[in-house]
Image (cartoon, rainbow, N blue to C red; front, side, top):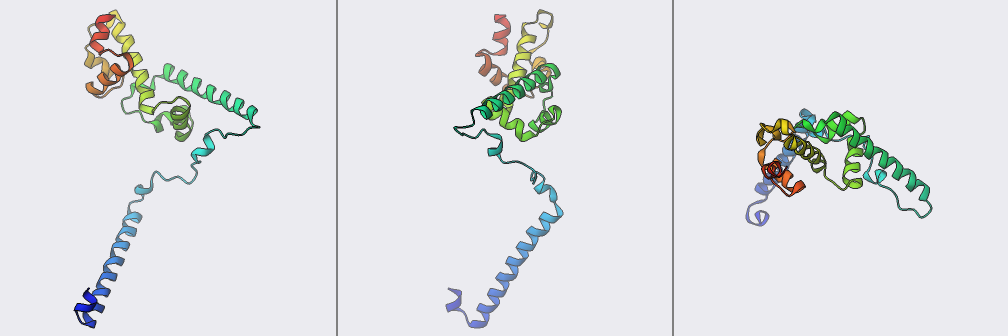
Length: 182
């Protein structure tokens, strides 16, 4: 519309100003990216594609599947054994990356193992161990003086609401009702 309303010189100057503004914005984005490389911290060129971790469906690969299943079963049992012996879930700030570093497997492999092979989310997997520990404490007669708040912090939860929600999801009881029923 501006092209037909104003004269030719104004139209040309308006185009020049718009182009300069566009170049300025592009340069600003490039400089921002160069000055703050942490924006690209999560990008790793050595990451493998998810399809490389998931089993391929081939008719002639029955032996491969059994080897894959054995490897998955051994990884799952090693993970469960580590969780029971070392109790990393007691750390309230535990992340999948930290757990992967502790058991010395890539975080992506651990994520695929938990999500696809165990059909759980990472936090559900960790919270299950936390709830089991809380159940043992709640049943323990010698620890009956501990409050629910003290127990939830001891087993790695940060808030009472998330503890109660997870506990009720796992046991269908509140922590207090579970303690009274024991």
